[in-house]
Length: 445
Image: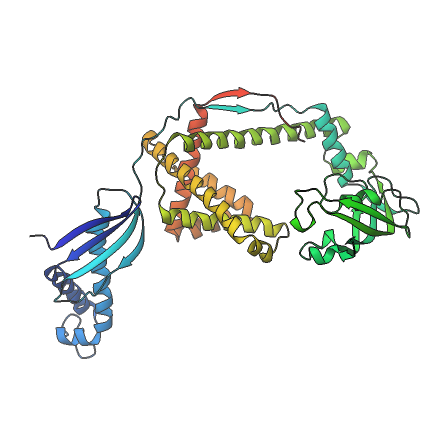
């Protein structure tokens, strides 16, 4: 007669409880083996190893015996009830081990999330579109001008500001008699600035466009008022559809002086002349477009896979993936100047968006994992080596150090293996895809 019995109950379509009953006889057997181990290894004054009485071992190591017994009984229950289950476990989300003691039956309950079975969708011959990768003359020229601008000097000038010059200025905005700064205290660029620099006539830059346009033609010491009509859908909402008047004063004008394209300039760019510089710019643009195509194709494949099959996603997976999405989002935006207060103000909206992204991200990973199994995709040593070298380049650490860290962390190895398998599976699907090149919808440099 079995000394371990298992009962499975459904909570919902992706969550179950697995209740494992372990008979007192089985627990007694586990404890007896445990006592022998302690008696063999215990070092008690006055007794040779392995010769101390059992009752002394029980008294001296009561706490350790109880802890180790619980761990072994739970491990036995997991092995019999979870590891041998006939459904695919995504993860254990809760454990109730009850009371475990020699002489009594024990009941251990595992709450687990499970993967719902689904048919692997068709993944061969999926259609993807991409854009031409050739760099146009206009794109090369735009990038060339941007490169020159990055190396331009800005010299103090006793003249009116032309487009492209920088102006040190101050301004204060009002809507009627109310200060804009009081309406949007979290975004001072729209309210009052005592000292700021504006690029005269710049387009699409953050801030008040009326100020940016208004400084064109101003000299140091000039003052004037400019009017800004905010769009109906403007953010922050407190300014949407409003008209503000700004008192503007120019403090200093710095003229933009482009660099001379001489031998020294080209040497600093590691090219011999303008023609070679333009060729390099063209190659960079083409490289960016190719990378954009790769990312776009991967996104198209992902969307097609997501839409081709429906199955329930484990709750715990969505929760942990949502946290990961939010961490990534917050890290990127804080690097760009966002504050914790900004996130707190939009907490619910951000969580809702992250939850949807997490659902789709986890679903796509589960689909790719099934395709990897079907195609027998493997993570080879060379794959690990390439990933380690990439991490070394990004972090600046030596590959040898990363290898030592990884060897101590099995979860990190498992995560790397998963990323390798998913990446190789996506590459396999892309190799089998049907491509069509379409005209670019936007011009990018």
